[in-house]
Structures are given as structure tokens and as C-alpha cells.
Image (cartoon, each protein chain N blue to C red):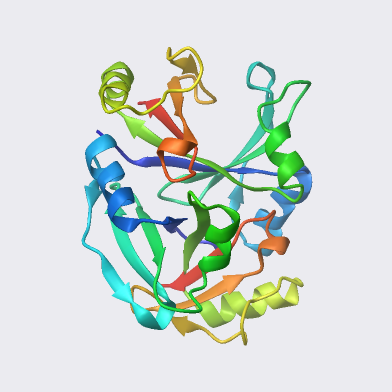
Length: 134
Length: 134
């Protein structure tokens, strides 16, 4: 079921500063900021060849990463996103094993315009897992 | 400088249980446990096609992940590892930009038998970064 690692998401308090770190200090290929108000974040994607790093900065009120940054003000690894072929089949398999799907259990459209779901970190060793249908 | 994402490491309190989660719940290709006493961990690699997930369980006294698990008992994302062509050139560039290299600044031999260095999470938005020369 589990496909490729689509991205690792890192929550950051200051997207411009984080982009500069990855570009200038680490010498990475850093994209332009994209505001995603419907997800409450501004994102920057970093192409590392085989996968992507997604930097996330809160956008607007009720951003899903505000609580994370309150706990870890300097930022930190927020989630990993894996690709799946069939997100509804994946969801049904996961639910049958007892894993908890966040929200109402129905896929939403993610940052890449594709259906995504998030799984409860308590069911995955403290790791927030996103699934994206590709 | 920054090359491919070699792996994402996840610290777990129970490697057998975590391996079962990734194999049975997520349907991933889970390897066999490898004890690395010189690193204070037992590791399991999960091949997700384009990169690897590395599950880490403490091994022996003074394991470098004991403090992490004391803070996050159910586990969590521990570090990301990027590949570099020349680890000494990478280190010298990083030091010149003011980034802190952990330990004595000299590469050690990592889980794949290749030279590795760790960078201070405070210089990378709360993310522990490993560099591996490939």
C-alpha cells in the first residue's frame, strides 16, 4: 500500500528565514512561497532530487500548525507524506486495522491539488502521517 | 551541496511493534533489525522506493535517543539525513556560514558504513540534520 515518500513537512516560524537557511547554508533548490489560505499555511517546496521538503508557515487564524509552533517555537518536523494509488482503499484498510483517520474520514484536496488524508500520530509512533493519492 | 534525502529517522520505544505497524497496517517493505552497539541503537530500514524510513530503538546505556524518548515516550520523527558528495567540503562550508556541527566536527562512520555528521537542530528550524557522504 505505502508508496514513495512524497515529502517531509517542517513547520517554521519564519518562512523567509527558513528558505534562506536551506538555500544559502545548505545549498538546496528552494521554490517560491505559495499561500494556501484554505489549508491555513504558506508553503515553500525544496526539491532534493528524490523527494521534497515542505516548509510550512502559519497563515491566518486557526492555522493547523499554530499549536505545533506554540510547543516548538523554533520549528520542527511536522509530518511525512506517502503516496498511495487508491486513497479510499488505503483508508478502508487502515480503518479495518484500527488506525484512526483524522477529520471526517473523507479525503480533502491537498497542496498539490490531489486527495489527501491524515492519520492519527498516536497510531504511528508519534508521527503524523499524510497519505496522498497520486 | 544538499543531495538526495537518504532517510527519515523515527525514534520508537518498541521496534518490533513499530515494524509490525509499518508492515501490517501501512503495507510497507520492512527490513530486519540491525543492532548497532557503537551507535547505541537498533535500526530497521523501510524501503519506500525513493528513500528509506529508519526506525530507531535505544540499545544499551547512553543511547543518543533515550533523552528524545523520555520527552516523547510514544516516539516521533528524530532526524533527516541528506546525501552529500564531499562531507569535509560540506562541513567547511557549513562552519563558514556559522552552522554548528555536533561532536568534535569530524565525520563518524554511520549505519551504512559511510562518513556522517550531525548538524545542530537550533540552526535548522528545530530539525536535526544528518549529512552522509555517498
